[in-house]
Image (cartoon, rainbow, N blue to C red; front, top):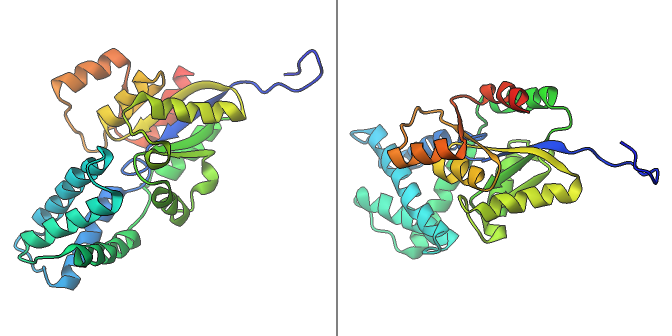
Length: 256
């Protein structure tokens, strides 16, 4: 479109924002693979139940990472706390420095296990076909440098116009401010039409985005049953549930 002065005015374009871990990247699978590799190198395996070992590490990640998001631990502090607790469960005491070194070695095994979900790239390609002019972005809870490193290793940086990380913004999902901040960054480039956010956590991602005025899309890959409060809030907020990313292009094309 051209204005009366003859300058070209960009039409509003759709924006689709994604969570990174367990939405595009197979984070949980990398965590499970990484901890077994590391534990095996340390002699913690054979364990009577490798699945239990994976569950413990995942539970510790959830507990201590949320303590970091709440400001109770530093980013490095939550890593060391996870290492200390896991080692203690296997009869090993770690001081602070040893816990840092323990986690650093685990992280290399985790990093080696990084991969995209199989439906990630096909979905981005399909969205570009279905929604001409669509722009993509990332909103993630975590440190920008750490999350950007994942995108680089997975060869994804060129697909996303903006990467918004809570560590750089100073506010975490599900706070509406981080979603609005992302939309403002896109709007500074060109007008934003319809906007959606896709993530694997119902309240943190989908409900949080919906409260900020976006279409909240919950990617429920594992068939999780929400609590009654979450289900009611999701329905009231207009959250849409999908079980595979492959469902997203047709869903948004139909709505927009």
